[in-house]
Image 1 (cartoon, helix red, strand yellow):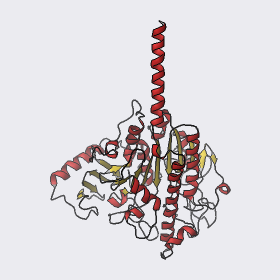
Image 2 (image 1 turned 60 degrees about the vertical axis):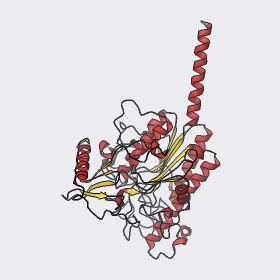
Image 3 (image 1 turned 90 degrees about the horizontal axis):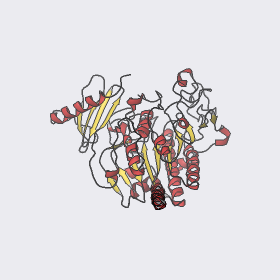
Image 4 (image 1 turned 30 degrees about the horizontal axis):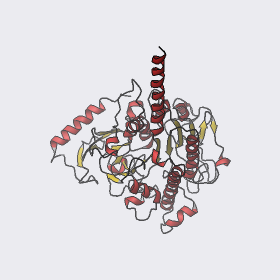
Length: 465
């Protein structure tokens, strides 16, 4: 009996050692996202003037996804796909400032927290309102907004520094010159913008504590503190860093405008400057991970939530791609995509396989070894680890889009788009024609028929609301 107990004890000890070793090997995970950054708005994409040295360094050292797709052509739906791995219509977020992330929907923070991770959200949330008591941002504190109260601290995030929606990208608590209106219709320059940074239930950071600083800097300051605290606690961490830049109102400091003084259009100069400021925050993050000696064990993902506004008073470039924010053409949904993970990615590569924000959840769970909860609903995203590890160059499932009466499906080189207004689907060969200039429906009728059938079958699985 004694020997049997000793044998059981040894096995339990070995199991505990194995579990501790496995936990130690689990990578930290950081999801970084820009807001309205166009596919062409980065130095590594060949922008003629924009300076993004840190994003460029990520592109040189890790994986550059040349066909990375936001889950939707506007922000709130895409953010939902990042955390759930499921199409945004499945849980009632049809567009921006509509619906909220329900507690019944498994999300990455909740799943990783169950797996022993410390979790933090920093920046723009946009998946529900953050207060029931005072007017805040677009919907917070209103009768309509109370039913959409869904703050990140109630969605398994341990540490938060979060806004409901947009803020100016410099001096974020004040209405900037030239942007009178703010969240309130009659706001004057220098008056409170109307969106707060929330840290918990009815707890927010007072304006004077934030000051006239770059917003990306403020977000990264909180995020790096969280990372340091997690390392100090010897816990793996999951950090969601969702910048406001370069969403309107775009404002840059004088020093960040200096490289672009040749740009005479005021808002374009500020746009370029605020992206440079955001890039500097990315550099701060990368340096912080190296200083803490955890860079090798940390996945850092970067993308944007949708394409740019792309207008004179609302700048941004999708380069040669057709369409802009709110479109299902490439310019509205194809965005910068990067992954840096020095301990696993020994050689930089460019990946031309279509990938999506839908893929974050299954990929992160595969990388961390944390299982999807029993009874979780089916995912629309796929595990990208075989692609990350160079074991495949294909995607096992098409990427579907349903948005505002329009639809699209991306399957390898092929894409169908139905622009709405009763118009039929068009078929494009994205590999040969990324600008979507030639409808190939008549040349490849079987391909189109197959893809339209697949899209109709997918749409039939979505709830009707």
